[in-house]
Length: 485
Ligand code: BG6
Image 1 (tube, helix red, strand yellow):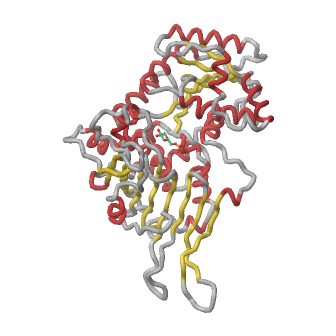
Image 2 (cartoon, helix red, strand yellow):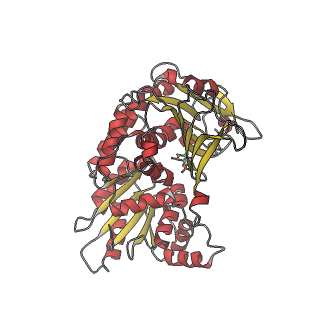
Image 3 (cartoon, helix red, strand yellow):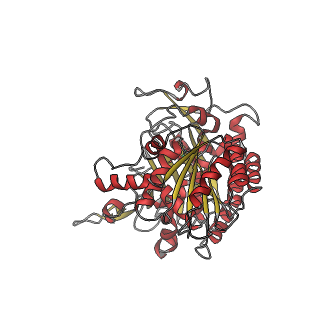
């Protein structure tokens, strides 16, 4: 763990990701005393900015300062850690300016240790030059650590991802590299390890003998809203399924790791992912939202190319060929502009088919990742009274009720802290990424038109539950809809 002499350099400091996620997370860690003592935060971006302007932007998404004096004071102290350097991403000489600034901060250190943590909140187009330039111009080899934190998109398919990873590898070792998938920092995703391996009752039913089907669902109630340029190039599969939902799937289905170490955990994730063949077209449903309920359709977004067939919704079914999961369908589905905001895992157990109870509801275990974190198990229970009738009920662990005083950390807080501690458990290893791309590349090439005509997504209205074809698609995999799904 880094205790002293640490600078966190946020590259892309004037962008949206930095403003909305990185700086608020750094502030939360600062306020709770989790940043190394006297840590400094340096912003770097192309835009020329005065110190005040930068401080204003970096703190613009911190909540609560207007109502709470303690938070307002903490924001003022946080600003004292901030400074800013403007410069180009491509020009190596500009990075010498950054290094000069870092050297000035470090000149005051008492010991030789100098830790530099580079956080790249940047678009993919400048990813490689920045990784190269900071290695060549800002790397400190005089003692202490250098780390680089990077975020998706990591390429667009297997080949481009390999090229990107290999180029970054020329400059940064695997140990120095922290690839963020922010879903791995979410509280409920971290809870999967505990739910599965600290509970005999759940662990015993965690296989094809007890489970009929599993759904991992991501729903957002808003469309691309001006972000269409980026989105259209990637589509919902690259945006959400290939990374966030597949990561959840791997933790949900891996075998028990030998230990808590990052390598043991990631070995098991890679192992289970390798048992999944590339997705079949016939196991895929693609959708695109159209105007409804007073909201614009995807093609009405002026940043989207006319007649785009980019999917904003996808449901895909994955199969894991190993003894535990053979024959169990795992449906990953994600969509923009749907009726609600919800991310959940829904495990539907097989039904009771014999004996004294028939035609009763299946058990379901629902792990709600957001909003309003919860784990609930749907059980059949006797209706109280003088007759014996089974009705579906719930055992409900809603976090807000069970953990009243506990604040649930933001994913980025948890992940930045892990990176400061040098813990890779919740970061994506290079071989994990490789196998994730192997699963999705053929279907993506089909969607992109690289293996014939591009498929046309079915339409669904903005604000709906998704394409009307979804119900039949789900039924194909044995899913029986329950009332809260
Ligand atoms: C990002 C996607 O990775 O995740 C966005 O690019 C998506 O399109 C976002 O909205 C969802 O993250 P969260 O934490 O809000 O669920």
